[in-house]
Structure formats: C-alpha cells, structure tokens
Length: 334
Image (cartoon, rainbow, N blue to C red):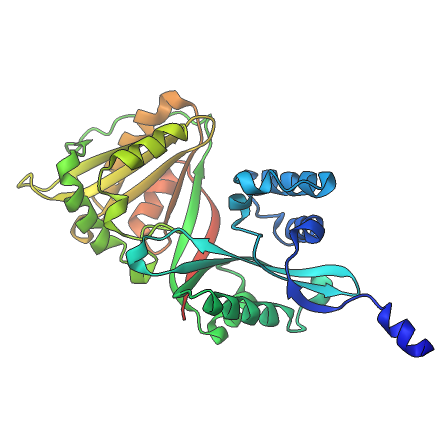
C-alpha cells in the first residue's frame, strides 16, 4: 500500500502529445537551447512570444499567427523525464495545393543535450509519422542542417529521402548597390500572359522531386499564375511582388527570371531561375539589376537558392551575400 502510494507520486516520464497550456514555456527553453545559435530574428521573436504567452496563461497570440513562425507547435509530441520537458517534435499542416496531396511539416525536432543518443528523437519521430497517417496525410517534409549527420542518418533510416540542399543567403542593408554592368541583356517585367513560360522554366530548373522552388514552395502553376485573390493577399500583408525576366532570341520563351518580393519593415526576397542552357551567363545580370532596383528600399536582401548552383553561388559571394544556413530538404511519402 505504501509502495503503491509512493509510485503514484513519481513524476511522469516518457512520450506524450504536446499540451500548450503546460508545455509552451518548456518548448521555448528547449528550442532556444538547441537552435539559438542558428535561429533567425523571426525565430527569436517567436521564442519571446512563446514565453510571454506561457507566463500570461493566454493562448490568444498563438492562434493569431504566432504559431506559424516556428513551424507549428499546436500538434506533435514532447518527451518528459521526471516532469522535465527534454524533447519536442512539432507537426503542422503544409499549405500545399490540393492537387499535390495532403502534406505535413515536421519541425523543431529537438532533444536536450543531456538526453541525446537514447532514442528519444527516434520515438518522437515514429509517433509523429503515425499521427500523420492517422490524419490521412500523404507525405511529410522537413529541413535539416547540412552538417547535422546524426539527424540526417535518423531521417534516412525512417524512410525520408533527401531532395536538395539549399543555402539561405543574406545581404545587409548598408551595402551599396553595384554599378551597372557594361553589357546587360534586355531585362523587363513579365507580362501576365507569360506566366506559363516562367512556370515551364521553373519545371526545368526546380523540379518538385528536387525540392521545388524552395522550402514550402512547390513548383506549381498557382505560384506563377496571376490571380486577384493572390494580389489582394499580397497587398493586405504589406508586400509587393515583381517578376523581372529575360527572353530568348525569338522573344517567345523566358530563359531567366528574378522574382522580387518586397516587404515593408522586413527583408526583400529574391528568387532566381536560369535555364540550364544559359547558366553561367545570366545570373550576374539579373542579380546586378535586382540589387540596383531595390537599393532605395534600404532593406536587407535574402535569397534561398540550391547549393549545387555553382554559377549563382559565385555571383552571390562577389556581390557581398553571406551564406547563413545550409539546409537539406527531405520528404517522406506515407
């Protein structure tokens, strides 16, 4: 009787679903410990908000968009050791076009350093994949640091496949725009009726089996086709978007493009596509053009680009871009 009473008072240890009302503060501490060195400003801001929500006991901020900053914490699992939160995996829906199936994002895979190499991450990942199956998911996607060999091997053993390695480039706002190149191809804005040509270019350069355009940006017509709904969504979020293109000699086909997404109070994001037959020739003109066009914004410029594109990598380095993260995109088909 006495032994049973003592056993019942022992703090819980093991795997369980996340409970935001009790776990949010512990998740914030764990994420900062595991990812603080590489976390961007959006991540750090989310950590601060997580702590504030946890301390106030209110979840209102979480359900007004905070959750999207770190990839979702409303679903997933935590690992508890004698009442202490030492592991976390988050699961959230991936906003992919319906025609591509039902996808989920696995993020924030983290284990406290004192409890690593004990199978915690493996158990949490298995539980997460089971959850995705139960929800009728068709696939799961995640990102892993390119130099994190331990995590990469775990995901491969679980059945994930590597799609492509991407680099996140950053150029600070105080660097002046470059001088115009002596010789420049004709660069102009893409016309609305040319969206199919740019989409076909993306299919050649960024096929979905190799990660698509980038993280959570599959190569799909909806990303290129003009629409009133998308224009309104962009405008109401304080962003604007332009597509600068280079056509081939027949003036009928787009052989290179630069999508620029300008965000008031944030960063300007670039997205470069160059036809395989033009690689090594058109990257610098488009990057040069974009930086000169964006100079008046006085904002940092970022780009997510495939690590295997040597020509673009060389230009980005010469134009004072800094490689911030090298991430491998992985996919699991249910």
